[in-house]
Image (cartoon, rainbow over all chains, first blue to last red; front, side):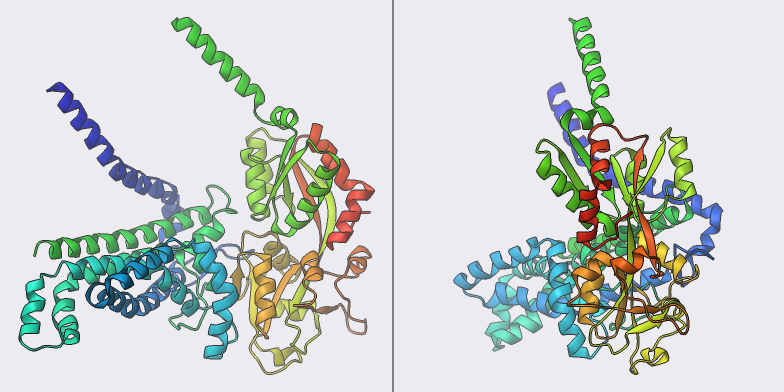
Length: 287
Length: 284
């Protein structure tokens, strides 16, 4: 009896560890960021210039970094939706068994490529292509980063959407086919709408991966901290800013605290995306 | 039984205590060097050559930026910090607070070459013109006698010693333009400049020499009437090239053991020959 209780507590403890760690990370971020509120003042974060190293005036406006992350994420999402969703639909509805056995491992390999390798590929191969394709002066732009990030997020979108599509009851499909709808009509008008909450959750988890990705954007987006919403401008994302500047920053300085604010904003965004995705997944599992 | 284990524990603690820090480096003949990306090339050439002559020495070199190296020295995670900028007062104060005694050695000199794409017809600029390009006052090549094309501005990340040096020496301490693209490494700058016809960037002389087939260094016009100065070992040494700086080693206290031997090697004729061969400028 006692043994059961002990084991139960041990299991509960290990399950609770990850929650504890998330809480500790939040506390840690908050603690390091706290000093910024009094000196130089929290309102300094709400400006449109990020100039952390300056002989005249250091500025810590988060707007360009937030719009940078936002722009790259939205573009990557727009690119990954058609590929991810149609890919998942094909694998679960149309592919033969041999095709499926061939496709799935390759999609998993894509998910396993280290981001620095993808970044390297982007810098040497993709950015010159983007540059000549759109007639730009430089290939280091938001769209270059978005293309690579979409590539990285597609495996996530495919595998979760595929689960959602497969869990659509076959009676739906049979009914549709029996009414004379073609397989294509059935897929797009019956299966996809039925699996929609799961597909949306897959997309949001893919977005979470995109927002948090660092190495690729650091290497290919050009890291220009300016307020822009053009896909052909270079942008500086929140993750790239933290990665590039944390190494140098003087411990305890305003710049140091400002970087922790960047971290807090970033964490809130990914946290929000994940909660939303979980909520949607729960909804569709209850059907 | 309990007593024995406590004694054991204490012994272990004493031994590990003794082994930490410098004595560790001596016992295992190992040395870590960390800091400026500009100097990584040079430092690894020194280390390689040194390890060829002294087989039991084990020297590891990593980059990350001068600031990163100094932070590592303060944290005690590196024996020698390589820095392309002078240590800041703030950092010296912090070192004093931690009971460290920072020792500075100038091991070579470096010029910063301003590089553009070989297809760009511009070949010489004044320091003032370069400064204006980087502050964003000049945005088109036709404002400095070139073709009508927007300037693609490349800089190092703000964690780089070169970033701050360039800001001080060329830009009169003004802020970088908002349009400047901050590249994570010198090789990324070389890569972009070689790809983008209208790009301008700055890299250490060593890198410019090595990438001479892919990027074109700009000649600097000092004053009206004087002939333009190319970035080269000769012009940095005789002081005619204006964008030059000393490169430093920082250690904690006076170097001893392997650290001392290695630094002596770097400053020796053989070491300074390596400086020259790598594309930097010897101190003497």
